[in-house]
Length: 271
Ligand SMILES: [Zn+2]
Image (cartoon, rainbow, N blue to C red):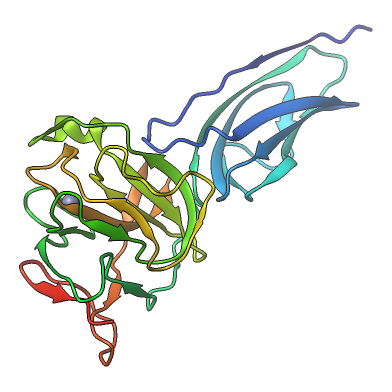
């Protein structure tokens, strides 16, 4: 009796502009089939949807599911493809779709007190707030009117998971989203912050760096989809094909509890 195995392994890269280039999904042979595993060298979890096309095989952990791979692990077993009838031909194809973050997560630290992302004793206006008509429809995002070159500080500590500061083009339409410069930081509660439109070459941090709250991370710019220099700030959870932005509370004044920022209001940082 002869067993013939043939395997096709296809990786579909996520269409989200949110790379996870340090994730590898692969497999190795065991007696009755194959172990499908992941190496994740990212500093945040990575979620991967595994879609198996099974021929005379079954998956021990089910199919068409999202698996969350912890940060910095190797040989993390996702599932096993096991041959059902060993006297017959069997094979499998696997497609993966992956992105940074825990895509099963819905909870986070709602009460976290973010710092205003600029220097002490400085005042800036929120020129567009949540659900803003210009570019924040259905988004919990804030635009701070920080002039070009103004210092941007980390609103919260975490790990830098992505940086782009090589772009310089901008325009006033969505088509320029692809030119956005940004710093993305992963927080301990599973959320990410994005600081967008930063000036070309201004990032003070690199992927993999740990940043503390208040640390200088970049300078304001007019890059990407922007009508003028400003800082776009948002905090979000990742869902397989999209970001889900979440509301945040900021410490405005030493003696006041943190609160949500409102469009058209100016905030002086007195701490
Ligand atoms: Zn914005």
